[in-house]
Length: 328
Ligand SMILES: [Zn+2]
Image (cartoon, rainbow, N blue to C red; front, side, top):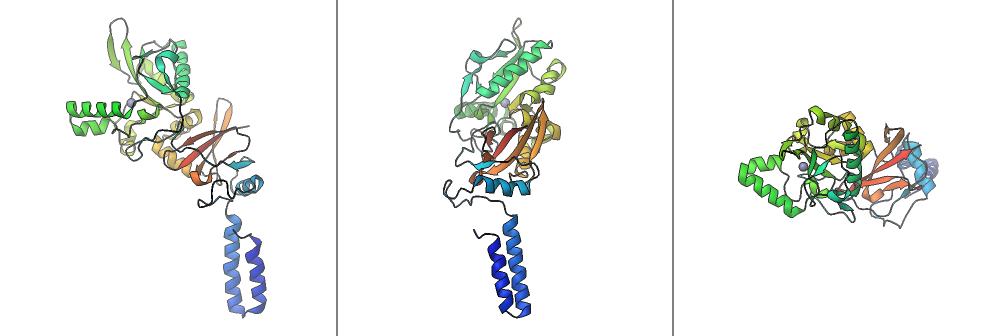
């Protein structure tokens, strides 16, 4: 890449030797080129190898700082990360599940507290999601909630999703199955970050739907404080492609759950918002529980994270990342 000063010096040399009109035109083009170069952030071109042309951290943060008002200093490029891992991965009809490079799934029955129930030992969740669920349900019970909320589904393999889809199609028809059951390979249950609640009365053995109303309203209202969102809202069916499910919650992390809830965004819409806040632009900010979080989007080819290492990263399952930084 040319340095910003070179087009200017070339244009001034030319101005002295060429006829006035052409010199003016040349100078205007060069000035415009210089302006574009000056305003461009220091981004590693996608064609360059991840480590081949790493810009100086100070250079990149300087360009970044001038473009974005809420930029942390000391950003550094991250050579490689997995866009298929993280609590914000988007799995829907358009973006199939791709197994992440690493993830810790835990058996809910082994890791849960006694504030809620789980169907059986086959229900698995991502470790971070289970930890958040334990805190959500412990606080629900502590404020008087019944301990009858039953986690009936968590992580699903593609084979299980296929079985559920076929079962629904056989019982209710293909249209119904497509509306209520994600296609195999396209269910976010496969991510380990989604769960289905039900209600189960231990003494009578009777199950009931988790409606999010009545006593369950507390869980619906407070879920974002623990990083969960109601994934398939009634008003988002045209965006998510899935009919309203009052029982299906998705772990996305506390700051993201808060922004999504405050702005009324489903996960598809939230990624649109994130992509509108690149690292060299204005960042998203939200304050939750005394911590302010600063969030920006990076394409995988130019991923920038704080040099301090104090950040959380999630891929979008498409080609980019959300970088989340607890700001001082
Ligand atoms: Zn579900």
